[in-house]
Image (cartoon, rainbow, N blue to C red):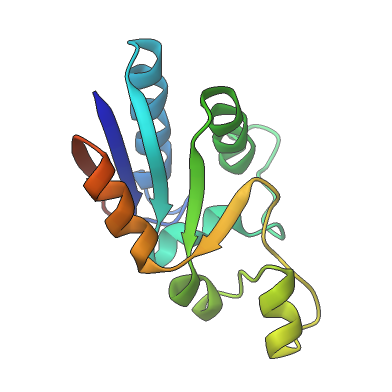
Length: 130
């Protein structure tokens, strides 16, 4: 089965990102595919390079990037939600003249069309709300 995941909750103030990560790990271990993971609303904070997890906590951004690399799926961050939360790639940083790009490597800034595309290509959309 091919899954698209939507993560809406912030990485360290909700269980959304960690639950989605556990689901993605279990699904890929069982032989299923992940079409795309779409981070939306506060979920985009997982892609903020300025956030550092304490040593005794799970480093969610790193865990996501390793899993995505190993299983060849995209970690997509909603552009509108990310701009509101200070997560910008290099092109948006130049466009809006912010001090620096803050998008963590391994994540891609995309529009809502990428969520629609993932839903069309996947068998199921699983949403992890805040």
